[in-house]
Image 1 (spheres, helix red, strand yellow):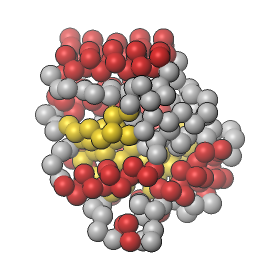
Image 2 (cartoon, helix red, strand yellow):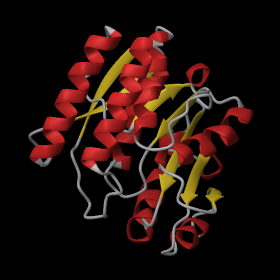
Image 3 (cartoon, helix red, strand yellow):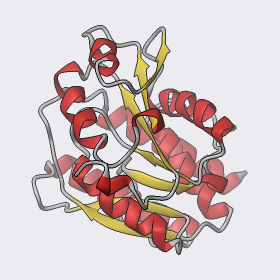
Image 4 (cartoon, helix red, strand yellow):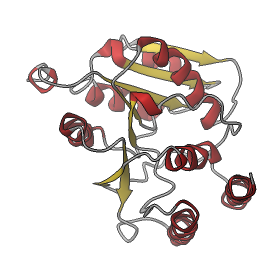
Length: 230
């Protein structure tokens, strides 16, 4: 049955940035392999200290390792640097802590098959379990980015994304943390990418977050204003 799901799929790769997610990664990879071939699954270990790499090794996927915790943006760029040499048609980014449901991969792949949009981003239900501070932060950043880009941004902070291969080379971007994902949105909008949105469940797995709301909001604003005045 798992093989059937992959028979008519386009060439899709997936990058899973992972930092101390050993308790969750095994389940994520087990489900992901139902939709994506093992050799197209790239786990980027960002200096984990909890056995995350050992879990990844059990699943026969590609493993890239940063010696230290460099940040989510740096981990994504590490994965992109590997994948881009393979000239992918599509790339999905998905967190390794279980907050992005692998069952949604089939819906992303279906959208890739339709071949209409360039960027598909998960749109979480803000009132479906999202803490109030994250709701406010996501609403505010999404509204600001919509104004700046002229694109209706429905969820600026969701890292569950499907990206056309011709838009994946974002290694020139400077951010190495969560604001990297904002930089990507700005660059794609500047390149006139066609955006689409896909409803995804709001899941908080219990894994500790490395996101700092105040610090990362300032980083977000810095990235946005730099784009405005550049």
